[in-house]
Image 1: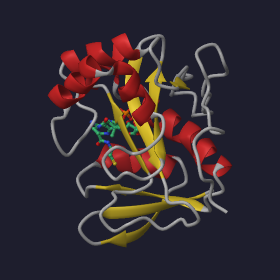
Image 2: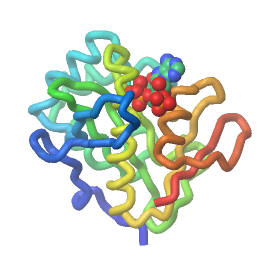
Image 3: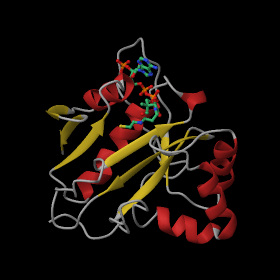
Amino acid sequence: MVGQGAEDVTSGKEGEPYARLDKPSSMPRINLALVKPSEDYLPAYVEALKHGWSPSMHEDVREDELARIRADARGFLAAVNARDVRSGLPGFHRWMWDGEFAGAIKLRWRVGTADLPPDVFGHIGYHVVPWKRRRGYATAALSLMLGEARKLGLPYVEIITDFCNVPSQRVIVANGGVLFEEVDALRFRIAL
Ligand SMILES: CC(C)(COP(=O)(O)OP(=O)(O)OC[C@H]1O[C@@H](n2cnc3c(N)ncnc32)[C@H](O)[C@@H]1OP(=O)(O)O)[C@@H](O)C(=O)NCCC(=O)NCCS
């Protein structure tokens, strides 16, 4: 049974074990935590938004996010920890933390099924701030988030990416993703 709530799916906090992916020796070890969005980390998130990073690849949501945080920071945090704001599905965000804010990853799901509504773009989406890319962070973050999806009882997750988004495709494949459909985009599944 796919879980009903996010209360039992907390990721590592700062100080808890970091992702350690055993990559070939050419790849440095990666020290990255997924942290639960909280008031402690919010200033760094706001700084990233002000620095030009947008947590959506479909639209520039920086001003909207800044306005929501200014109006009600606690409400903003409660929302990103409880549901997927865009679809209204249960879901939560985690922020990538390497001592600084490094990016965001979200997981959303439907209760009782691995299926998603057709307009929802996969179970997991991730964004690394441009100034911290190509360090293995997205690959490590997805690996950690798969652990959270497993706890929910999902048999697999779907991740959808554009044909031209080679970095994202590499992130998915490095985490065991298998391409199962190519229509408007590439749809991958990762068995859990
Ligand atoms: C896609 C994205 C998350 C990758 O983040 P990242 O932290 O740089 O990814 P990683 O460092 O884990 O790299 C993953 C792989 O992609 C490769 N890669 C990363 N950036 C690349 C680039 N610009 N060109 C070619 N390859 C690239 C890496 O070399 C690595 O390959 P390897 O595993 O074979 O060594 C990041 O580019 C991003 O945030 N893009 C905008 C949002 C987005 O596209 N999200 C995905 C939605 S499905």
